Length: 193
Image (cartoon, rainbow, N blue to C red; front, side, top):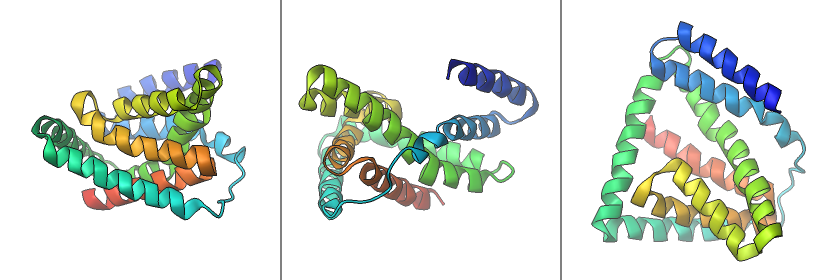
């Protein structure tokens, strides 16, 4: 795995020297790094359990809670929307790259949910659960996920949503959290179009 990461890094440096503007490089390199994790998806048994609708209900409740948090505490809302504006600028630049809309959509809707759920739920949640128990696994995996997406106070609404993804994973398996994450990203991607 270390060799793959080193090779990916070297290739990305070469591509960076060729691909301009920087947003195109970031888009292509990010998609390539996500694609390295695709084989992990082959290890998953892609079958949803009967209780999957409960996971979706918990997710929708987490969206309501996150929305109320953003609307009720001005500092959190301000931080959250600053990051959303930065994301919108990135999407605007990425869409100008050759096949930028296609890559951005594939990355957001398919690659990111699979890779992030494998990393944050399949690995981090499980390792934390083994070492410290289930409650710390919820907290650690959700906090790491939130901070990766939004720094500072803007991470709090994402933390709430990440808890629902951890619930979906823990109760119904990786396919459930991947599907909910993909739904979330699909809606967000449609918002940016």
